[in-house]
Length: 378
Image (cartoon, rainbow, N blue to C red; front, side, top):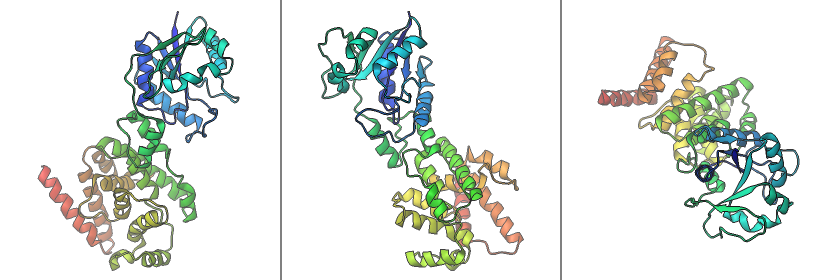
């Protein structure tokens, strides 16, 4: 007889506490555990992420162990009562023994669950200890086991707080889940309406999303916060659609201290202006994100890895039409950020000088420093 556990809840997002509970249930004798996000929890605020995203995050978390499985059994169009979920699972898995896994914080309310007596007759219960809560209860007909697992003092709310602080929450989130969150902009404001407000057309928005995807991938490779890379990428071209005269007016309004060569060229000016708008109008306070946005057009001396990630992601995102050294830049970006950024700057310099245009002195200084860094590594 197969023993199947059900770990429910909002999973908004799923985190290592959920995984630890599932693995403990497997160690306690279950053959399989279903990670089953619910649709609409009773007496709680609505989930921040939609059901499809929460189910996909469960799938990514479950991929680490073949005994774990994401399940849509609780994503029903009606109120999800545990007793109905267990009945559905009995239909899906004939002959299986079902075990409901819950935290000790839910235990005292268990006798008041819908059709509790019927539920107790249909399934067993495993309880995860939680600090400050009793792990035992005396209820007729209830088959209960307290799992041997050290409590993890964390919640999905803690994870969301870290994500909003632009951390990937590595101690709480599986890496692939953090990557998914960054790639889909979960738990962050929806900036697309803001980009539209500043005049961003579909083509530029596709570029922006391509930069975000590339920046997240490079951040994952090079140990940079994926959440910070995603945010910087989403806002890097915020000011690009504005006419140059409007850019200059806003730069003056914000009191930006920029050189004439920057303010004369919208291709250069939109970077520092986007950073100023992000900080003053959108409330972005992370200095690393603001720096990356500001210097993505020119580079600068003292570029951080986040600066480099955004700079090269802008140059190599999948929608870019082919140009000299693009394939090499894409290859280098995965192994050597400094070399990739330096190559991009060199190709830009060649392009600008071939057209007898002025090459930005800020970029020239950045190139010199990056070259020195590369030589030091050699």
